Image (cartoon, rainbow, N blue to C red; front, top):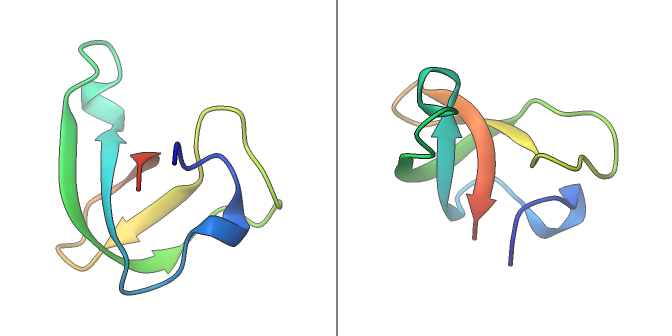
Length: 62
């Protein structure tokens, strides 16, 4: 799954996100979802989440 629908993502899920600083390179960071930061049901660039490590980015892969 690609992470553009909020309903596909829940806290505790392992995901790959792209951090703001890595958007140009597309480098992915893996982690476990702590909080979902996007309120809308879908987002074309991926739902924004906070990982348990504290990093914030958009979900690219579930």
